[in-house]
Amino acid sequence: MTVAEMLGQFFGLVALAFCIAGFANKNDDRLMVLLISANVAFVLMFASFQSWTAAALTVLVIVRIALARRFQGNWWLMLSMLAVSGLAAWATWQSITDIFPVMAMAFGTVGMFMLRGIPLRVVLGLAAFSWMLNNIVIGSIGGILAEGMVLVTNGITIVRLYRLRRKFPDIIE
Image (tube, rainbow, N blue to C red):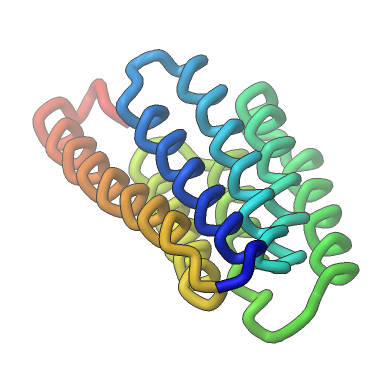
């Protein structure tokens, strides 16, 4: 294993730690800070593995988190983010496997800007699965574990929301 690959594994595990801390946190603002921190570690992980499309799109994920939280439902910003992501992918494209981070970015962008509740979590699950496929291709153990944790947590939350909606149909969206 090269030094760059060891650094990539290290940053993947750092990202995993930030993801665990974030999803275990009940404070939304702290969750966002921890998710941004996780994505900084993911950028460093992808750069270490020379997965340039994933690295570039993850930088944009950080921007997207801030924008989507503040401007939820804004079609113009969502389409702009998708366009910038497309340009970043075009500029960094190396192989067909770069389709995975592109799909993850597209799912995440549409979900975060336009959806709430169960539909949001389903689309974010598709994004996490796409990131997981990319992490499998590049061989990042921390990245695979982080996205696996997101998928499991997301699935549990979908079930909980579904049960709440059945129990309180007039209150839960």
